Length: 297
Image 1 (tube, rainbow, N blue to C red):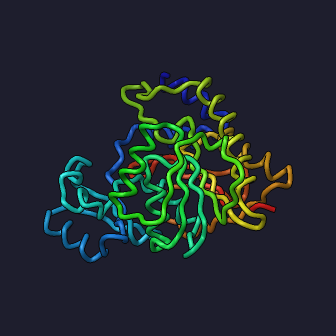
Image 2 (cartoon, rainbow, N blue to C red; image 1 turned 180 degrees about the vertical axis):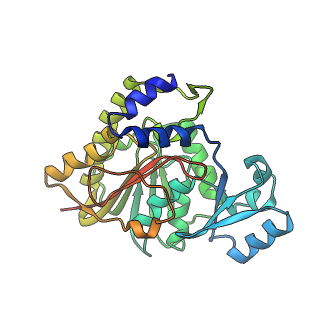
């Protein structure tokens, strides 16, 4: 897809000024970001290694375990022992938000519906101090193997992996569900010389919307009444985000739990057509992203 085609698509949801801002963000090469795996390392240990290696970094105001790397590439981090030993995890800042919103507590049962490669699964385990019971689902066998590798590498103790299409799950009930659903990836697109680098089309978007609706319906079925679902995508298109959430709110199946945007005041946010949800603009530090915190009623 060419840049001009993408502009037209984005203009359905955003005004000209915002479209220009989004396009500019997609032209940036994002900085490397990582998360401390608190199941294996302390912040002090990681800071000492980064300082000793001459790695420049910035802290993240809304998450004490996240870092923005200023002067190194991903490959440089992968060569460090702290990465090889599973003490840090390379992860988009935006992708760290859903697990924080889920707020896992000890002894809760949590379903991660589309879990590979395991960034959010292992983050949930760390936030729950390895005392949450996680069911991690992945339908693709190769990706499920990668999920198992990362779960083992990061020292997660209480996680069961199910190699299955999450839409087919039945007979389960959980305290909380994380649905970081497959999407068009519109928030992660890179534009180089006026061309969108990834495969992207309206047909892809349409397929994703159908898939997302079925997954959310299944998530609602598997969470207990009065309990929470966090829905997220790396898309900035309303048809994959607010419009899907609104359908289920209007049916009386879920309500929106307000996300406190003051927590993310240093982040470039996108306007949303539903109150209480979070839209993140793509830029030098963040992928374009969407998060909704829902409660089954």
